[in-house]
Length: 205
Image 1 (cartoon, helix red, strand yellow):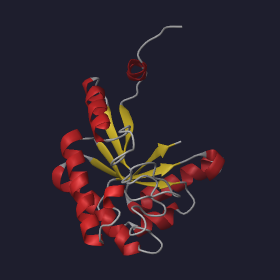
Image 2 (image 1 turned 90 degrees about the vertical axis):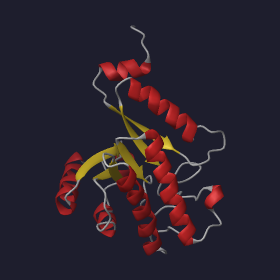
Image 3 (image 1 turned 180 degrees about the vertical axis):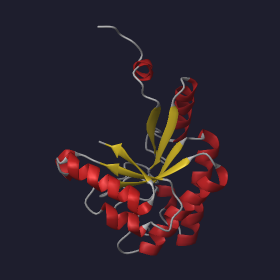
Image 4 (image 1 turned 45 degrees about the vertical axis):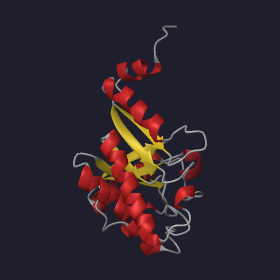
């Protein structure tokens, strides 16, 4: 029955990092750059670290939805790569997150159709690489996360991106979709970490 501000409750109970989604040009500015930048400042003033999830879309990105932002939809590949680099650079310079995801649940790639992992594999790798490069060149201390939904197929996916410079393997794990065996989850997380020499985190559960 003791009421308090939600963020204060989190802080008092040991939460140290807040994960925020960022959309490029959302319909109503919710989860857009200004809102996320302002909220990040509020969080940082309370002592939280910031974990930004760049969807590279104007709305939700997930394995079934990787829609290119409206303003980027007619770009050729080279211009799209440049747009990813410049956008990511702006984000890390202005918000300075401790952690950043280059894409959200990018099982099927990102920025479809040009970045579809099945039909345009090299394009996909090039786009992810541009995002990671923008972070490396402008935010030395920011840890880069690549994020896969589920555990089945995760080894295949992280083998695809094994030549990319990133720091942390991120996984979504929802028992209703991905199986209820925590032993399997633990085994796969350990295997991924050892195989690719990365830290592994559950980005969503």
